[in-house]
Image 1 (tube, helix red, strand yellow):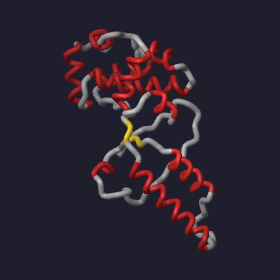
Image 2 (cartoon, helix red, strand yellow):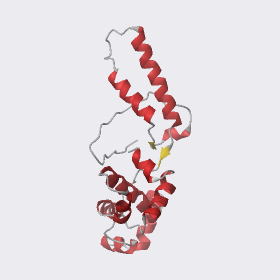
Image 3 (cartoon, helix red, strand yellow):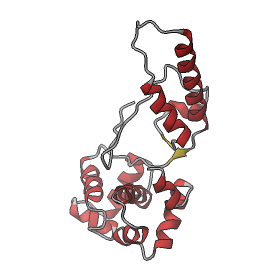
Image 4 (tube, rainbow, N blue to C red):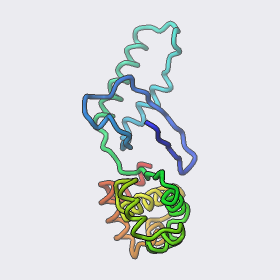
Length: 194
């Protein structure tokens, strides 16, 4: 499935490749973002440290350890809750320009009318394109875009009140309510995992 991953800060990336899905559930047929538990994070790090080159002679204890770590990783992946983090981008050129402009400067315009005028379309046309192309309303998509921007700001260690203000929320509590509703946990916990 074609997708992209963007890091908002310097990071270390560990990629786990699975031959088969962790179980038979339909959720594994689509892309999704998982909440990585501290245990899963440490297991991935340990698996990378212990990695054995293909064809190298390995004693049974090392092979067993790799197998056990692999099984624990699969169990943690099965248990990991999904997070609503992705920001979908459309194929329609006008809507794509609008979406990229919102991502670049989310607070430049306050209304859909203003954003639509910037790309030479009516708000009604843009609303229809959001539903057709992305399966969501502009407001739902914008909320995801603001959450992505909040992640970037949190990675810079900005205080929650500053993040809320920069994203146009009247108060930190209104911002907290949006994050909790979107990802199922308060910002203090969610941003602590990023």
